[in-house]
Image (cartoon, rainbow, N blue to C red; front, side):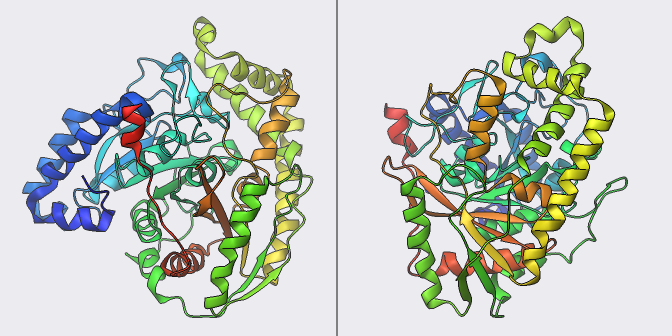
Length: 469
């Protein structure tokens, strides 16, 4: 089966072929899941019923995602689909309702195939957990897909579905997208709702984030899932239908683009630095001004950790003492750190996040877009872990990976990763574009220009090689 884009699949499905399209994707899932382990829970029977409904319902066939298979990360509730947050502690929990984004996907004619693997509570830069096991990178199975949205990124890269809805709390949507050679967008805070079961995650740092193989498909998914809902604490005004997809074709203005390879801590791996530098050559053919410059991204790591710890502590408290032995030790460790915090400590951390964000955002008074590497290092090999045994050592290791990621969760800005090459092990490298709050249209327009450039090479992994061993 060819790896079609969502637009091509939609045209086929809209002609009454949604069930056929779905069965093709299910065949691919069954062939590759044993080797890739991207899927946490599959809703095969319900998905087939949804596809048949698209084939017989004229309104659904006319939807912007008619018949397009979609996976969601195991943090989005779907009626009748097990919901575990990557944890054994939530085994047996099956919601009887759709999250708002799942409901929007269904109304748009999309067919939700199931949920994807993530580390427990999304707390690692690798994709593995005690419940579902380890997920492998379709480009090189000796490596993981980073984390925490690794299952979603693998599903898209391997053609299990053209679209996935992930989550990004500190770069954890963008890093897996980069490691798997797909497009990943962390929208502006408030662009995509989390409700109705929760109205924010991690004090607003965690954002629901679209993934796709192309910029246009990413925009198409954002158009469907974006928009405020009642009770949303950060909700942005709704945009017109097709607004973000249209932005991929309409950007004409000259942008002021800055770039940097210097992270606030750690260092950028040479293969990644070389790939990003080479990708910047595309600007020789674009009308934009490109200069080396960067905001001060320092001083934001510790407040982020405090916010994470407080939220994980609250989540683990909800598990209940009778199931605590089902929670993985690293998760318990950060939860206990959160339990030791006072309310004053947590408020101070949130205030520090906001103050740091205000300092960083001043940079966008002069520039329209900042370009950085998405990750500072390649993803870990399967079986490798972070250096150091203590929590502080492990956190420092992961934070270095995410050094260009988490600052923009704190600022709430939109940030998009584009494939820009591969490293010495054949694992993809991503280039990150960061825009002003609310300016996803600018990012998508520039990303589409870069993607269309003849200087940009697009390759696809061969996950069948992984299946063959």
